[in-house]
Length: 318
Ligand code: 5GP
Ligand code: MN
Image (cartoon, rainbow, N blue to C red; front, side, top):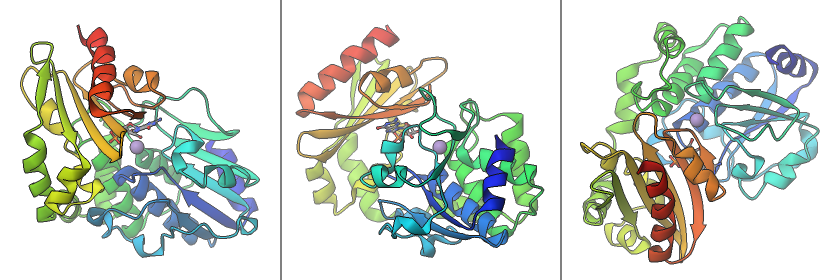
Protein backbone atom coordinates (compact mmCIF):
# COMPACT_ATOMS: atom_id res chain seq x y z
CA UNK A 1 0.00 0.00 0.00
CA UNK A 2 2.84 2.41 0.77
CA UNK A 3 4.18 1.94 -2.76
CA UNK A 4 0.76 2.71 -4.19
CA UNK A 5 0.59 5.93 -2.20
CA UNK A 6 4.07 6.89 -3.36
CA UNK A 7 3.00 6.23 -6.98
CA UNK A 8 0.11 8.64 -6.54
CA UNK A 9 2.39 11.31 -5.12
CA UNK A 10 4.81 10.86 -8.00
CA UNK A 11 2.03 10.99 -10.59
CA UNK A 12 0.22 14.10 -9.38
CA UNK A 13 0.97 17.61 -8.26
CA UNK A 14 -1.60 19.20 -5.91
CA UNK A 15 -2.68 17.61 -2.63
CA UNK A 16 -5.15 18.39 0.12
CA UNK A 17 -4.25 17.25 3.65
CA UNK A 18 -6.88 17.12 6.37
CA UNK A 19 -7.78 15.44 9.65
CA UNK A 20 -10.48 15.21 12.31
CA UNK A 21 -12.45 17.85 14.20
CA UNK A 22 -11.22 18.76 17.69
CA UNK A 23 -7.60 18.55 16.67
CA UNK A 24 -4.98 16.79 18.74
CA UNK A 25 -1.20 16.52 18.53
CA UNK A 26 -1.23 13.44 16.32
CA UNK A 27 -3.62 15.00 13.81
CA UNK A 28 -1.66 18.26 13.58
CA UNK A 29 1.83 16.80 13.76
CA UNK A 30 0.97 14.24 11.08
CA UNK A 31 -0.61 16.81 8.77
CA UNK A 32 2.32 19.20 9.03
CA UNK A 33 4.95 16.47 8.70
CA UNK A 34 3.25 15.25 5.52
CA UNK A 35 2.99 18.84 4.29
CA UNK A 36 6.75 19.31 4.66
CA UNK A 37 7.39 15.93 2.99
CA UNK A 38 5.25 16.81 -0.03
CA UNK A 39 6.92 20.23 -0.32
CA UNK A 40 10.30 18.53 -0.21
CA UNK A 41 9.12 16.37 -3.11
CA UNK A 42 8.30 19.59 -5.03
CA UNK A 43 4.56 19.08 -4.69
CA UNK A 44 1.90 21.59 -3.77
CA UNK A 45 -0.10 20.96 -0.62
CA UNK A 46 -2.84 22.68 1.35
CA UNK A 47 -3.65 21.70 4.93
CA UNK A 48 -7.32 22.26 5.77
CA UNK A 49 -8.91 21.76 9.18
CA UNK A 50 -12.41 22.63 10.26
CA UNK A 51 -11.18 23.73 13.68
CA UNK A 52 -8.50 26.20 14.62
CA UNK A 53 -5.23 24.87 15.98
CA UNK A 54 -5.42 24.76 19.81
CA UNK A 55 -3.07 27.30 21.36
CA UNK A 56 -0.56 24.73 22.70
CA UNK A 57 0.07 23.30 19.22
CA UNK A 58 0.61 26.59 17.40
CA UNK A 59 4.39 26.29 17.74
CA UNK A 60 4.45 23.30 15.38
CA UNK A 61 6.56 24.20 12.34
CA UNK A 62 4.26 25.12 9.46
CA UNK A 63 1.15 25.74 11.56
CA UNK A 64 0.71 29.17 9.96
CA UNK A 65 -0.08 27.65 6.55
CA UNK A 66 -3.16 25.74 7.81
CA UNK A 67 -6.47 27.05 6.44
CA UNK A 68 -9.99 26.81 7.88
CA UNK A 69 -11.60 27.69 4.55
CA UNK A 70 -11.78 24.86 2.05
CA UNK A 71 -10.27 26.02 -1.28
CA UNK A 72 -12.08 25.14 -4.56
CA UNK A 73 -11.81 21.38 -4.83
CA UNK A 74 -11.09 21.31 -8.57
CA UNK A 75 -7.52 22.27 -7.69
CA UNK A 76 -6.74 18.97 -5.99
CA UNK A 77 -5.48 15.78 -7.59
CA UNK A 78 -5.77 13.83 -4.33
CA UNK A 79 -6.62 14.25 -0.65
CA UNK A 80 -4.90 12.74 2.37
CA UNK A 81 -7.29 12.10 5.27
CA UNK A 82 -5.17 11.47 8.35
CA UNK A 83 -5.98 9.96 11.76
CA UNK A 84 -9.69 9.45 10.88
CA UNK A 85 -11.48 6.11 11.03
CA UNK A 86 -14.46 7.64 9.23
CA UNK A 87 -14.58 10.40 6.66
CA UNK A 88 -17.32 12.15 8.70
CA UNK A 89 -14.71 12.89 11.40
CA UNK A 90 -13.33 15.60 9.09
CA UNK A 91 -16.40 17.68 9.94
CA UNK A 92 -18.83 19.62 7.80
CA UNK A 93 -16.67 19.47 4.66
CA UNK A 94 -16.49 15.64 4.71
CA UNK A 95 -18.95 15.12 1.84
CA UNK A 96 -17.26 17.70 -0.35
CA UNK A 97 -13.80 16.29 0.32
CA UNK A 98 -15.17 12.81 -0.41
CA UNK A 99 -15.75 13.95 -3.98
CA UNK A 100 -12.04 14.50 -4.65
CA UNK A 101 -10.95 11.86 -7.18
CA UNK A 102 -8.35 10.13 -5.06
CA UNK A 103 -8.71 9.83 -1.30
CA UNK A 104 -5.86 8.37 0.72
CA UNK A 105 -6.46 7.41 4.36
CA UNK A 106 -3.57 6.97 6.79
CA UNK A 107 -4.79 5.95 10.22
CA UNK A 108 -4.29 3.82 13.35
CA UNK A 109 -7.81 3.60 14.80
CA UNK A 110 -9.87 0.44 15.14
CA UNK A 111 -12.09 0.70 12.08
CA UNK A 112 -14.92 -1.08 10.37
CA UNK A 113 -12.97 -1.13 7.15
CA UNK A 114 -11.56 1.79 5.26
CA UNK A 115 -13.82 4.49 3.84
CA UNK A 116 -11.71 4.70 0.70
CA UNK A 117 -9.85 2.40 -1.61
CA UNK A 118 -6.34 3.64 -0.87
CA UNK A 119 -5.79 3.19 2.83
CA UNK A 120 -2.72 2.58 4.95
CA UNK A 121 -4.18 1.47 8.28
CA UNK A 122 -2.44 -0.22 11.17
CA UNK A 123 -4.52 -0.15 14.32
CA UNK A 124 -1.59 -1.44 16.34
CA UNK A 125 0.52 1.58 15.47
CA UNK A 126 0.96 4.09 18.28
CA UNK A 127 -0.03 7.03 16.14
CA UNK A 128 -0.57 8.30 12.65
CA UNK A 129 2.76 10.05 13.18
CA UNK A 130 4.51 6.68 13.48
CA UNK A 131 2.87 5.57 10.22
CA UNK A 132 4.16 8.69 8.47
CA UNK A 133 7.60 8.04 9.90
CA UNK A 134 7.46 4.57 8.29
CA UNK A 135 6.25 6.17 5.09
CA UNK A 136 9.25 8.53 5.00
CA UNK A 137 11.57 5.60 5.71
CA UNK A 138 10.01 3.61 2.89
CA UNK A 139 10.65 6.50 0.51
CA UNK A 140 14.19 6.98 1.86
CA UNK A 141 13.24 10.62 2.37
CA UNK A 142 15.76 12.55 4.44
CA UNK A 143 13.87 13.97 7.43
CA UNK A 144 14.28 17.68 8.10
CA UNK A 145 14.09 19.26 11.55
CA UNK A 146 10.56 20.49 10.75
CA UNK A 147 9.36 17.02 9.82
CA UNK A 148 11.09 15.48 12.85
CA UNK A 149 9.55 18.00 15.26
CA UNK A 150 6.04 17.38 13.92
CA UNK A 151 6.40 13.61 13.89
CA UNK A 152 7.87 13.54 17.39
CA UNK A 153 5.00 15.72 18.69
CA UNK A 154 2.47 13.40 17.01
CA UNK A 155 3.97 10.23 18.48
CA UNK A 156 4.62 11.69 21.93
CA UNK A 157 1.08 13.03 22.39
CA UNK A 158 -0.75 9.93 21.12
CA UNK A 159 1.26 7.66 23.42
CA UNK A 160 0.64 9.93 26.43
CA UNK A 161 4.37 10.65 26.56
CA UNK A 162 5.37 7.06 25.66
CA UNK A 163 3.30 5.57 28.49
CA UNK A 164 0.43 3.77 26.72
CA UNK A 165 0.37 0.12 25.71
CA UNK A 166 0.64 1.23 22.09
CA UNK A 167 4.26 2.24 22.79
CA UNK A 168 6.37 -0.45 21.12
CA UNK A 169 10.00 -0.89 20.25
CA UNK A 170 9.34 0.59 16.82
CA UNK A 171 7.75 3.63 18.48
CA UNK A 172 10.77 4.40 20.61
CA UNK A 173 13.14 3.67 17.74
CA UNK A 174 11.23 6.17 15.62
CA UNK A 175 11.26 8.74 18.44
CA UNK A 176 15.00 8.22 18.99
CA UNK A 177 15.74 8.66 15.31
CA UNK A 178 13.62 11.81 15.25
CA UNK A 179 15.82 13.30 17.98
CA UNK A 180 18.74 12.49 15.72
CA UNK A 181 17.06 14.61 13.03
CA UNK A 182 16.72 17.62 15.29
CA UNK A 183 13.49 17.19 17.28
CA UNK A 184 14.01 18.78 20.71
CA UNK A 185 12.01 16.71 23.26
CA UNK A 186 12.18 19.26 26.07
CA UNK A 187 11.11 22.20 23.91
CA UNK A 188 8.28 20.19 22.34
CA UNK A 189 6.99 18.89 25.71
CA UNK A 190 7.23 22.35 27.30
CA UNK A 191 5.17 23.86 24.49
CA UNK A 192 2.50 21.18 24.61
CA UNK A 193 2.24 20.39 28.32
CA UNK A 194 3.81 23.27 30.23
CA UNK A 195 2.42 26.37 28.59
CA UNK A 196 -1.15 26.08 29.82
CA UNK A 197 -3.23 29.24 30.00
CA UNK A 198 -4.28 30.05 33.56
CA UNK A 199 -7.93 29.80 32.41
CA UNK A 200 -7.43 26.08 31.82
CA UNK A 201 -6.33 25.55 35.41
CA UNK A 202 -9.25 27.67 36.68
CA UNK A 203 -11.56 25.47 34.64
CA UNK A 204 -9.92 22.38 36.08
CA UNK A 205 -10.55 23.68 39.60
CA UNK A 206 -14.28 23.89 38.83
CA UNK A 207 -14.39 20.58 37.00
CA UNK A 208 -12.64 18.62 39.77
CA UNK A 209 -15.63 19.33 41.99
CA UNK A 210 -17.81 17.30 39.63
CA UNK A 211 -15.79 14.11 40.17
CA UNK A 212 -17.96 11.09 40.98
CA UNK A 213 -17.21 7.39 41.36
CA UNK A 214 -19.21 4.29 40.53
CA UNK A 215 -18.86 0.57 40.95
CA UNK A 216 -16.89 0.88 44.17
CA UNK A 217 -14.42 3.35 42.69
CA UNK A 218 -13.70 1.48 39.47
CA UNK A 219 -15.33 4.16 37.30
CA UNK A 220 -14.38 7.82 37.75
CA UNK A 221 -16.27 10.62 35.96
CA UNK A 222 -15.91 14.35 35.36
CA UNK A 223 -18.37 16.80 33.83
CA UNK A 224 -17.43 19.96 31.92
CA UNK A 225 -20.46 22.21 31.58
CA UNK A 226 -20.49 25.24 29.33
CA UNK A 227 -21.20 27.46 32.30
CA UNK A 228 -18.00 26.21 33.96
CA UNK A 229 -16.05 27.12 30.81
CA UNK A 230 -17.64 30.57 30.77
CA UNK A 231 -17.02 31.29 34.42
CA UNK A 232 -13.34 30.30 34.08
CA UNK A 233 -12.99 32.44 30.94
CA UNK A 234 -11.79 29.25 29.22
CA UNK A 235 -12.35 27.58 25.85
CA UNK A 236 -13.77 24.18 24.95
CA UNK A 237 -10.30 22.98 23.91
CA UNK A 238 -9.04 23.56 27.45
CA UNK A 239 -10.82 20.40 28.63
CA UNK A 240 -8.29 18.33 26.68
CA UNK A 241 -6.45 16.01 29.04
CA UNK A 242 -8.91 16.27 31.94
CA UNK A 243 -10.12 12.72 31.29
CA UNK A 244 -6.68 11.46 32.33
CA UNK A 245 -7.22 12.67 35.90
CA UNK A 246 -9.78 10.11 37.15
CA UNK A 247 -7.77 7.37 35.44
CA UNK A 248 -4.69 8.40 37.39
CA UNK A 249 -6.40 7.42 40.67
CA UNK A 250 -5.62 4.09 42.29
CA UNK A 251 -8.41 1.59 41.72
CA UNK A 252 -10.04 3.51 38.88
CA UNK A 253 -10.24 1.32 35.79
CA UNK A 254 -12.36 3.48 33.51
CA UNK A 255 -12.43 7.26 33.32
CA UNK A 256 -15.24 9.20 31.66
CA UNK A 257 -15.41 12.88 30.75
CA UNK A 258 -18.71 14.48 29.72
CA UNK A 259 -18.00 17.67 27.80
CA UNK A 260 -21.03 19.83 26.98
CA UNK A 261 -20.48 21.05 23.40
CA UNK A 262 -23.86 22.74 23.14
CA UNK A 263 -27.10 22.55 25.06
CA UNK A 264 -28.06 18.91 25.60
CA UNK A 265 -25.20 17.72 23.41
CA UNK A 266 -22.16 16.03 24.93
CA UNK A 267 -18.80 14.83 23.73
CA UNK A 268 -17.83 11.78 25.78
CA UNK A 269 -14.19 10.81 26.27
CA UNK A 270 -13.39 7.38 27.67
CA UNK A 271 -10.09 6.05 29.00
CA UNK A 272 -9.23 2.68 30.52
CA UNK A 273 -6.35 0.85 32.11
CA UNK A 274 -4.95 -2.50 31.03
CA UNK A 275 -7.10 -4.79 28.95
CA UNK A 276 -10.43 -3.04 29.49
CA UNK A 277 -11.76 -2.09 26.07
CA UNK A 278 -13.60 1.23 25.99
CA UNK A 279 -13.70 1.35 22.20
CA UNK A 280 -16.76 -0.92 22.31
CA UNK A 281 -18.54 1.54 24.61
CA UNK A 282 -17.88 4.47 22.27
CA UNK A 283 -18.82 2.35 19.28
CA UNK A 284 -22.18 1.47 20.85
CA UNK A 285 -22.93 5.22 20.72
CA UNK A 286 -21.68 5.71 17.16
CA UNK A 287 -18.12 6.74 18.08
CA UNK A 288 -14.84 4.86 18.12
CA UNK A 289 -11.12 5.12 18.80
CA UNK A 290 -8.79 2.68 20.54
CA UNK A 291 -9.14 0.01 23.25
CA UNK A 292 -7.78 2.35 25.98
CA UNK A 293 -8.95 5.71 24.59
CA UNK A 294 -12.18 6.35 22.73
CA UNK A 295 -14.87 8.94 22.22
CA UNK A 296 -18.41 9.54 21.01
CA UNK A 297 -21.08 12.23 20.97
CA UNK A 298 -24.50 11.84 22.62
CA UNK A 299 -27.58 14.04 22.67
CA UNK A 300 -29.60 14.48 25.85
CA UNK A 301 -29.55 16.18 29.22
CA UNK A 302 -26.58 15.41 31.44
CA UNK A 303 -28.45 13.02 33.74
CA UNK A 304 -29.80 10.91 30.87
CA UNK A 305 -26.46 10.89 29.05
CA UNK A 306 -24.59 9.86 32.23
CA UNK A 307 -27.11 7.13 32.89
CA UNK A 308 -26.73 5.67 29.39
CA UNK A 309 -22.94 5.74 29.38
CA UNK A 310 -22.63 4.39 32.92
CA UNK A 311 -25.02 1.51 32.24
CA UNK A 312 -22.93 0.45 29.27
CA UNK A 313 -19.66 0.96 31.15
CA UNK A 314 -20.79 -1.02 34.20
CA UNK A 315 -21.63 -4.00 32.01
CA UNK A 316 -18.06 -4.02 30.72
CA UNK A 317 -16.19 -3.30 33.95
CA UNK A 318 -18.19 -5.43 36.37
P1 5GP B 1 -10.60 12.03 22.79
O1 5GP B 1 -11.41 11.54 23.93
O2 5GP B 1 -9.21 12.41 23.19
O3 5GP B 1 -11.30 13.06 21.98
O4 5GP B 1 -10.48 10.81 21.80
C1 5GP B 1 -9.91 9.57 22.16
C2 5GP B 1 -9.81 8.69 20.95
O5 5GP B 1 -11.11 8.37 20.45
C3 5GP B 1 -9.08 9.34 19.77
O6 5GP B 1 -8.33 8.35 19.14
C4 5GP B 1 -10.18 9.83 18.89
O7 5GP B 1 -9.78 9.88 17.56
C5 5GP B 1 -11.30 8.85 19.13
N1 5GP B 1 -12.59 9.52 19.09
C6 5GP B 1 -13.00 10.54 19.88
N2 5GP B 1 -14.26 10.94 19.58
C7 5GP B 1 -14.65 10.15 18.56
C8 5GP B 1 -15.87 10.07 17.79
O8 5GP B 1 -16.84 10.81 17.98
N3 5GP B 1 -15.88 9.12 16.79
C9 5GP B 1 -14.82 8.28 16.55
N4 5GP B 1 -14.92 7.37 15.57
N5 5GP B 1 -13.69 8.34 17.26
C10 5GP B 1 -13.59 9.25 18.24
MN1 MN C 1 -4.03 9.45 16.51
